[in-house]
Image 1 (cartoon, rainbow, N blue to C red):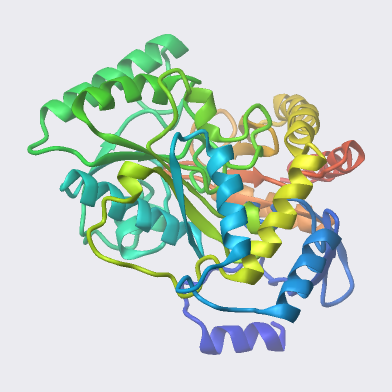
Image 2: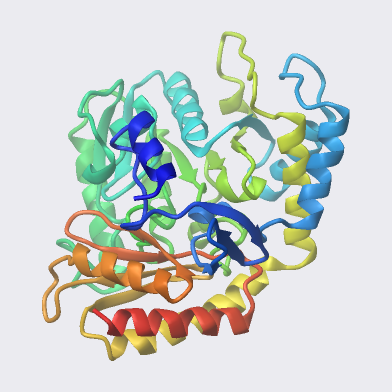
Length: 427
């Protein structure tokens, strides 16, 4: 055990998870690579939990941070803030939500907490629909509606949460159905659930692709079908885009656009990638919903001039270099490479995902039983080969998560797949 690891254990909570039997200290990064304190170089296929969206040490972002920090680091939202207004205008336009208003936070957890505050105040109800296998943050409110027991340490809640089928396509009671039948069954389940609730449900919150749950997703159009039901009851739709936003899925700029038949969500939350590592989150909502609060509020750190400057530079780089298109092209090649690998690897149950948001589900060969020890062994072996991977999963699932910076090259994708192939075959 290193001295730094010992110091970590002595002063930080036991439940603060670390990857690897011998945890890494990362000291610097460049492009799609990071370096540890012993000088080893790794291809980063997890991007700080999908947060290093464009590249490590992107010069445009570093320059924007340095220039803004040299002028003014902090002011709070009590004063006019040009970088915050500039970014809000761009995000409102990109969101697809008509007459949008934007509120900035410091994290995805806080963004989702704010969305829940808006929805419950607007609807005057504490009933929330959430998806099974979901994850929405670590605050008291967001943990209480997370549908994944691995990340929900308490059953106490300020909300009444009702869980709906649909976030996991190939497990559960509807797994054997066709896509159309699956959507119909999930809609019927939603209708039945609403028929049993007392009072008016405030909102449905859903990740278009479930992140912590293992990059699972429903067939395209499920949430559009849900929206048709929700609209009849006046229930709001919150799309949690903390992991799916900014073009990472390749096909769409936002995950909700795979379910756009009945319009955009009422509320959209974002975080992670927009700041490329800076602490930025936010909420977009149509003005009627955003302005429903009848008391004043501020944010001390949300919309900080430095984080806004970083986000503006990062968003500009992403759009100017068509990183969404790169995620679609390179992610598509990587997905096919991994599916071919999975077809010859007995412990791989499924390779899934879209764009640069891919998951490899690991099970005991010949069964649907999760094999977390094997997933950990693959992660360790990949590290030994110079590749960093994430992990996830929900009920009886173990998943390797792959989400590199969206500037990943074809050569780097092939390099990562080759290392991963050797790691999988070592189990």
